[in-house]
Image (tube, rainbow, N blue to C red):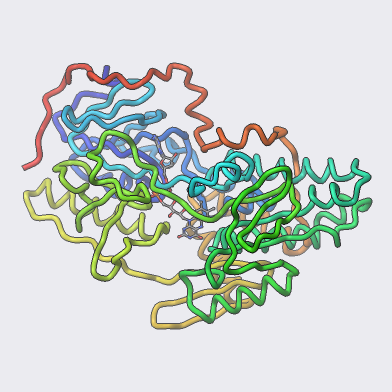
Length: 461
Ligand SMILES: Cc1cc2nc3c(=O)[nH]c(=O)nc-3n(C[C@H](O)[C@H](O)[C@H](O)COP(=O)(O)OP(=O)(O)OC[C@H]3O[C@@H](n4cnc5c(N)ncnc54)[C@H](O)[C@@H]3O)c2cc1C
C-alpha cells in the first residue's frame, strides 16, 4: 500500500516532520522537479519557542500552531499525510507508518527532539514537560487545578506545596517559563485567588551548571539572573534534581523542596526513528550526518535540525538545537537537491549565527548579537517581541498574538486560565506529544517484511 500518493515520474522526496526544518525544506522545493511528501503526526506546525506562553495562559494554542495543509495550499508538488512514522526500511527505500508504507527516492528526517529525563524515572513519571501543544495545555490545566485544590487545604504545608513551582533547567525555556510564572504570581493570581496568600507561592529555578542561559554571553547570563532575582525567583545553581516523589523534589544539595509542580526543561534527545544503522545514532539519539546533512553510510537519507548531529571544526559537539539551525539546514538541503537534479555537486552547510535572545518578563529580555554585542532591558524586550512576531507562521497568528500581547501589556493580565481538560499526574508519562497519532486507531505494528515496492525505485548516483 502506498497511501494513495499519486504515481509520478519525478523523484519523490519524503520529509518526516513539519517543524521548522521540514516546513522550510518543503517550501523551498516548491519550484523543484520533485514530488514532495510531508509526513507529520500532527496536522499543524508548532512554534515551540512560544509554548511556555500557552502553558502560562498568555497565548492561545491556536496562536502558535498553523495547519500544514493551509501553509502549502497552492503548492502543486506538495502532498501531506498525517501519520506516525514508526520505522525506516532503507533496503527497500520505504518508511513504515501507522497508515501504511510510503516509498521514497530521497528521505529527509526532520523529527526534532524529545525530552530527556536522563533516566530519572520518578521525575519522568511525575514532572511536567513542555515540548508540544498538548504538554503546554496540560501544564496550564495542572497549575490552575492545583490552585483550585490549594483553596480547599487547611494544612499550610500542603497548601503551599500545591502553589510552589520548581523549574528544572536554566536554559532559555526554563528562564522564560520562570519569568512568566513570576508575572502570573504578581498580576494574575491575586485577582483570581484573593483567598490565597500568594506570598507563600515560591518559584525555584534549579540548574546543574554554574550559570543560567549557558550558551549565551556572560553579560546576558548575569543580566538574566539579576532580572530573575528581582522577580523573587529562587535560583539554585550547581544543583541537580535527583528524585520527585510524594510532592518532594530531592536535589543534589541533599535538601528537598515541597511542591506538586515540577516542570522539566533540562534536556532533550534527538527523536530518532528505528531502522537506521546503530552506528549512526549518537549517545544523545541525534543522527550523525556529513557536511551536506546526509546520514553517514547512506546514499539517499538525510537528517536536518535538532535530529542532525553534524560535527565540524567550528562545532565539535554538533550544532545547537535551535530553530535557525533547522531552517538554514533546510534551505541548504533544498538548494543541494536542486543542484543534484541538475547533475551538480552538493555544497557543504555553513551556519550563519544571527544572534540569540531570551525574555524574562515585561521590559526584560537579553539579546546577544554576532560581534560580541549585547543588550537587554526594554530594547531587548522589544527586539524579542518583534522577532517572534515576525517568525510566527500565518498572518492571523501574527495579528492575534500582537493583540493578545498588547492587551496583556496594557492590562497586566492574562486572559487564558481555562481548565479545558483536567489533567492528572498518572497521565504524565504517556504524554509524549503524540496526541493526534493516537486518534488513528489503525496503528499496525511494524511488519518486518515490508510489502513489495509497487513503483520503480530510482537510486542516487
Ligand atoms: C519550549 C521550547 C522553547 C524553545 N525556544 C527556542 C527559541 O527561543 N529559539 C530557538 O531558536 N529555538 C527554540 N527552541 C528549539 C526549537 O524549537 C527547535 O530547535 C526546532 O523546533 C527544531 O526544528 P526541527 O525541524 O528539527 O524539529 P521540530 O520543530 O521539533 O519538528 C519536528 C516535527 O516532527 C514531527 N515528528 C516527530 N517524530 C515524528 C514521527 N515519528 N512521525 C511523524 N512525525 C513526527 C513532530 O510532530 C514535529 O512536527 C525551543 C524548543 C522548545 C521545546
